[in-house]
Each structure stands twice: as structure tokens, then as C-alpha cells.
Image (cartoon, rainbow, N blue to C red):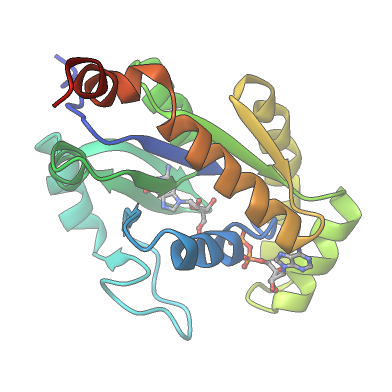
Length: 207
Ligand code: ADP
Ligand code: 5GP
């Protein structure tokens, strides 16, 4: 049976095609909300130059990934460009139980799994202003060769169609504006009445 994820904190699921600026935006937002927890995924992809184990990802071999998966330790997982990526259910639950909000930077396949498991998350899709701009950003980043870049662009088009079922869309045209929009979503979601029930009761009862 699927395990339901227990939660007190909010989960913000942010998806975007590779190169849309998700890493840049998430880093900027972590400076605004230092208490926001960034979930560190497990992956079988080898580290890129500059990647730090335990900060960017937990880099593990395919056997370890399979073992964790067999034990039901992933809240979601997906195979992307031949490598596996997964979110630890145990860590996610622990952080949420402590009342902390969490950001998950995961692809559309993973987001869909969480939605199908009825995770009461807030699903946000980050779009590039256009496919041409996405191509330019990917080539400027210089982390992929030509073939890998083409594969990412092809996947980007498929992924962008998935944006239709997300709760919020942010177009990363100007980084500053995108940052303000993401900040606004996080603040507004925390002011929802369901989140504020205890505060309301305390005020009403004079506690
Ligand atoms: P992702 O994590 O979505 O794959 P990155 O954050 O690595 O994308 O961004 C891809 C490239 O685009 C990087 O070189 C980054 O500096 C650049 N970039 C990100 N946001 C913007 C923006 N709003 N305008 C122009 N370039 C951007
Ligand atoms: P990269 O290899 O460029 O760091 O990431 C490739 C893709 O994997 C990105 O779209 C990123 O959001 C996604 N990704 C990273 N971690 C996870 C995860 O735990 N689960 C899923 N489903 N996707 C992930």
C-alpha cells in the first residue's frame, strides 16, 4: 500500500524544464526565507563540476538507489536522462512534522506522482519566456554537450505542456520579478485560513 505523507509544514513543489532558471531562483529564494527547507534529492547522476555531495544532491550508485526504492524510502522518484532521482520520504516527513515548509525541486514526473498520492502540496511551474530563450540559457550555461542539450530541449517542450495542471505559473523573464512572484506565493499560502486556525482561535479566546 502507498504510504501517505504526514505533514504540518507546507510543501512547495517547483518544476521547470532544465535551463529555465530553477536553481538560480531557488537559491535567491533561500536567501529571503532562510527557514525554508530545501529538500536534497538522491541521484545516480555523477556530480558535475561544482556539485557538492550532501548540498546539491546525495550522489549514490544505482544499487543503493534500488535498495532504497525497494524499501519504499522515496516519496517520489523518476528516471531523467538515464539517471534516477528521488525524494526521501523519511526526511521529507521529518521536516514537515517539525512544522517547517519545504521546497522540492523536482521534474514533472515526480510532481505528478505526488499529486496522484494526493499530497496537499502547492504545485508551481517555472516557465522560460520562450523556447528560444531556453536554448540560449542552456548554451550559455555550458554544462551540456550538443546532444544532451537537444535532448533537454525536446523534453522541455513535453514538460511545458504539463504546466497546465499546476496551481501557479511563473515566467522567468526577469529574475527579480520571478523572485517576487515566488515570494508572494509562499507568503500568501502561509496566510490561508486553514493555516491560521490556531492563531485565529488564540486571538478570539484572548490567549
Ligand atoms: P535550471 O536549474 O532550471 O536548469 P539554471 O538556474 O541553471 O536553470 O539557469 C540556467 C541559466 O540561465 C544559468 O546560466 C542562469 O544564470 C541563467 N538564468 C537564470 N534565470 C535567468 C533570467 N531571468 N534571465 C537570464 N538568464 C537567467
Ligand atoms: P539536474 O541533473 O540538471 O540537476 O536535474 C535534472 C532534473 O532532475 C531537473 O528537472 C530536476 O528538477 C530533477 N530532479 C532533481 N531531483 C529530483 C527528484 O528528487 N525527483 C524528481 N522527480 N526529479 C528531480
